[in-house]
Length: 448
Ligand SMILES: Nc1ncnc2c1ncn2[C@@H]1O[C@H](COP(=O)(O)OP(=O)(O)OP(=O)(O)O)[C@@H](O)[C@H]1O
Ligand SMILES: [Mg+2]
Image (cartoon, rainbow, N blue to C red):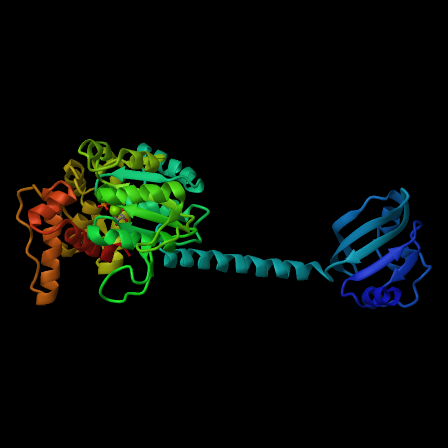
């Protein structure tokens, strides 16, 4: 053991010195001797061998000095000096020099800084891949109500509470849900979104909770994980929760209470750790009165409730929203907007915005397509109910024209239905889930 200790001591990379209580050198390892260019030093006083040393002081006072800068041979080194005590008395002092030079340390700090930058970039990138693509800094707010709401959400994000987000269509519910996940301790976990209205009622259960092999007659389907399982250790966003069929509401309630899911055709429950965020633009209390929503589920979801005010009640947000949305539109269309005519603001401020921020985005996108210079003018703004005919766009390939027509029909139906999606589906004569699928498709293309 003695031999081994000696070898370790002698070969250590750090420079090590040991003195007696008077400051006389007892041991000095090779690293230190080579650095100083000395040989036989045992028995000499440290001050004769090491410049600026404090070993003798530490040995005398018995107070350790940790990681102090020690200048030797014109180099700043990091020295640590520790008194070695026995029966309350100093019997020796141990000195080490960890870095041969502070330069080495600052070099290391630069590397750490660089790695930290890279890490935060990858973290963000990973989050995007995991599903959350919006962060709080992407939510535009100027009005006091929105500022307050955002500040509250930032606090809520850090807790693990279930959140219910309500607000009219296009107010930014999904945006907030993303940001809450991205600002939570689950941010590195998955973010899974389910649109409860876009999936036909018969498929929703297996979509949410998964199914076991052989759960369905006919085709020998392999088992599949449900969205809750996929969201494990992350967040699940139950969008359009107001449209969830009643029987499934009962099952969802059980999942929220028990924190475990049972796959369709499964025999054992699977424990899950998932934070739930639910969104709806329906008035849940009135859905409860109609008998279409369970009151117990409502209380389970309504732990923290956020109501996003409609755009017409916070017109102070308009200028900032317009500039942010135009920037996004310019990125995809390449059309440059240098100036906005004053008259445009009067038009935008007097509209009621039933489709809220999404409608504003659509209006701006249409306007940008109609511009011929780089100034956005009043005549480029087409609003429903303004009595003006919808401007005719130039001839485009049939496929594009059909897609554009379908999208336009959906947007107009939403405008006519004042943002009520069930009503819009009815006006178009299509089913609820088919409407939602189309709605998702047209909005999704622009979201990302
Ligand atoms: N405060 C905001 N700042 C920036 N963009 C916003 C803001 N609010 C909404 N948007 C944008 O408006 C669009 C609609 O937002 P989102 O999809 O979150 O609305 P929603 O409330 O979920 O609507 P719906 O009820 O129809 O699903 C998105 O493109 C979103 O980025
Ligand atoms: Mg939404």
